[in-house]
Image 1: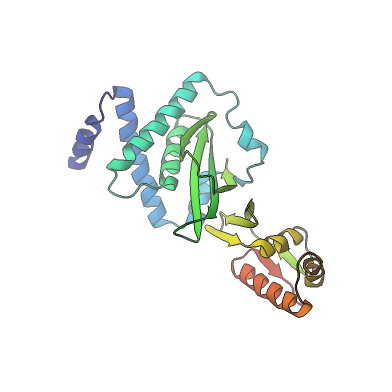
Image 2: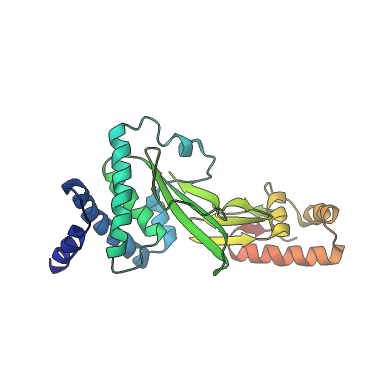
Length: 158
Length: 87
């Protein structure tokens, strides 16, 4: 509870944040923590089963994911993306792209909005392979954007 | 006979390909020649046919080609990306 109060205080420092967005930031923080714990406890191969079907970027489900999305769903997707990115600096761990994508996916699924989680890689400057994860929903770029030009998209979870 | 295995997906980045397996939770980077080998085994293929194709496309001696292809396949087998049935 002390942590939650502390978090709420941090959240209030975000200027001009209304109630809806404040609630989303709190939920985003919880989802991010949950993603972090899952990644610590389970190998990715196990987590992958919860993310969806792993398909090539050319799979028709990828392009079709946003069809029929309502303006309300699009706004929600944008707000959730904002909330996840806004909560990242407040987490007690480094909130990398995969955790953000997982947190946002969880929040969107909770609201019945389908997502596409993209994975790509390329040669890195510091590491042999630079890997990245980014999320789309309702035709909206949710997390992980912009995607660096040296990366090629390899697969998606739909 | 050489066959692809698992759920590896790939994407070209310049001359190379990047590969990912959700089942393995792993990424692989493969160079130009390895990328070509990966293409050549899209349907099951044998090492003689793979080497013949590579010798047509790259400047390489037959013995060197076979040795390098064997080494590449061994690595890929360790990553669960191919299965090699040796006679």
